[in-house]
Image (cartoon, rainbow, N blue to C red):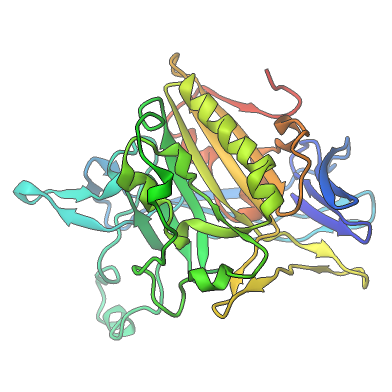
Length: 376
């Protein structure tokens, strides 16, 4: 996938496997999606290697897996754009390297906290309190004073979250929606946005960061998705589950996408939702590509350039359906059909460094990806 952003304010996502290109173009103050026929002519050579946890252990019946994808992409588009080489990090999200806090249950068995203990479809990696126990003395010496950072996972009643301390927000948030989670009497007015005190004070966002910024505190896991429990709804108001979002987007087009996700949950067995920010490059006047984004508040909370939402639908028939969306963090005309924001899942995987499809295919051989061209 190639991200293009030219002086006329156009941002495009192109896949390297022959999928149709998708773009966004600014008209006045709003962004509109564009879809072209241009495709990359050369398929990128992709090598995948799956590494299994060295300990080879199984925790609470969930496989301990890591998905590692090394991809080197080379292609020329229209003789002008060079698709740069990319190396994707450990997959996260639905099938990423997922770690979480564990607690001891009765009888000495390990039990996952919150939603993580109820998710049947994603392989997870149990997070130890410290670094893995090395087998060689030299390796023990290397970790004598600990490791400066590990994946920061939060498993709560309503979602599982991977936190990014640099951006002061989440890399991704996973929810499970169904008829039960959408039913209940939970009251949103009884919830307040609050700091996540499980995050170190150096790396956490505060309400003061948003005050006067011009941005909404945009939920990643939506509060209205979790009416089944007041605590589950309250958990969505941690600022670790929030990102700065343009008010017009948050209150209109993005809100419509959240409502649509809930409507799908009412008509399917389960809908697994993964939501997160994107920071996409764009071309500046000097002809070079840059990743630029605003930060707000004294804690420098990063403002995403775009947001993604991946929906994994479990049909009553057992079929799995995949829908993936990207919206710019700018005013978007809410009258534009949501199908116009559908993008190939590969675009999101390459842009975010996350992996979805390989992990879904470990659970099913019946997967249907819905794009704008084959929407029902």
